[in-house]
Image (cartoon, rainbow, N blue to C red; front, side, top):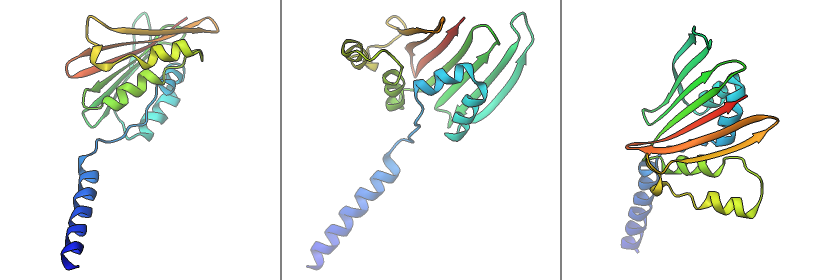
Length: 167
């Protein structure tokens, strides 16, 4: 009986320590949140700071296209560059380390789209292993005269997601 108790205690300790120390951090960021952040800088700031991102740099842009540039970072693994130019094109570029495959897949699958079975099948077959510089994906939609989309590509060691809105 004593040997069974020791074996059970050892198995439980191995499972618990493997679960605690072996998992990647979970970042619940979605494409819908990033797309909403394209038009609302304060919303994007609150979402990123809520997910433990650190604002590294925030500067005003003084050119023909005045605006704001923000650079966010999450544990040197996920980077967000946001460029806001009022009444023009806004961009959010997300770089995700290849070790965070779950986040990369979620960003593709949570891109808003019309609810049709054919389109849902199309999104579900986008495989991260097929994305590289030459085989980039572009997902777009138009709402209220505003063209919104994301371009996705891979350049080792990062997956890039460039969210854009055009007026």
